[in-house]
Length: 332
Image (cartoon, rainbow, N blue to C red; front, side, top):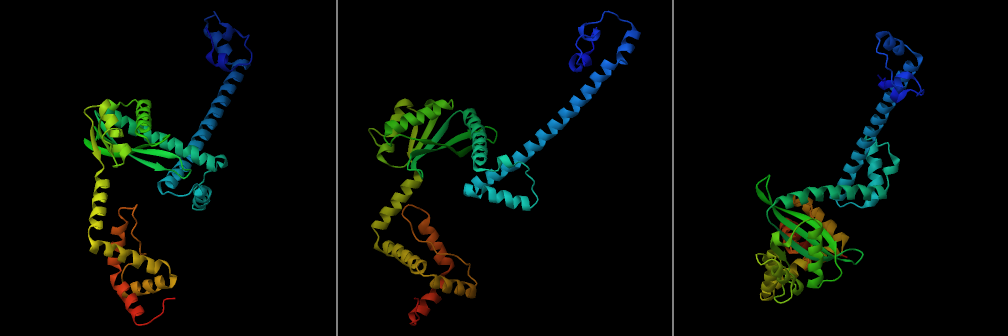
């Protein structure tokens, strides 16, 4: 017969109820229950339980504070804010009543660690959905980051079994050695293999029309189709539409003059704060929205559309500014 409390908490390990007592009398139990050693062990147990409670409470409080900081980090990433704003946002939220209480996590290293943890968590959930889909497709494009490293951006399409619909999501950005189709193929196969995905389950591939992507003899699409004959390769519809639009512009002098006019309007105002002030005054007068003009840009497909939209919504104000200038008023 043993006393569990004394076994765990008593400092005297030589007592009978720790080594084992073979006297099964009721009085023996009462005597041990009232003994000084047993009461000390009970006190040690209560102290230990209280300490465990305090430690658990501290851990819960710490977890709650870390969760608040992670929400803040997620906001910074989602809104494309600079990491330098991390401490400023912490100070602002503390003024608004949020109590973090953990100074060691209020630095850029902690911010990077939190964002990596959030990113990994999101990717794991996405990967599970892609794996549960019987097939998937990818769309890729090349880019160069701020440190001039070449990278490949990968998006994926998959069937969401829970929602019973196709879904499209950002997948990964991976660093590549060069832009040859062989290098792109090796990088793509590597990232799929690491995440337990197979080229044989990839039924769709989309990219721009660059030779290393859609080349008939040695493009990435060609190499992938050799590995998976059921793969359907597509020259990105958005890229093709943009190329067709550019070609249409080249063959139509009116459209060329129209784009030049949009660019001239933007240039006319962008180089003079005074002209912009006049435009804003007329926008207030005509009750048109206070919009800044934007210029066409060859690398931003929607730029010309946005430029036309701004001019259209500020048309009356623009006419007033130009009429004022036509009457001999100086814009200098």
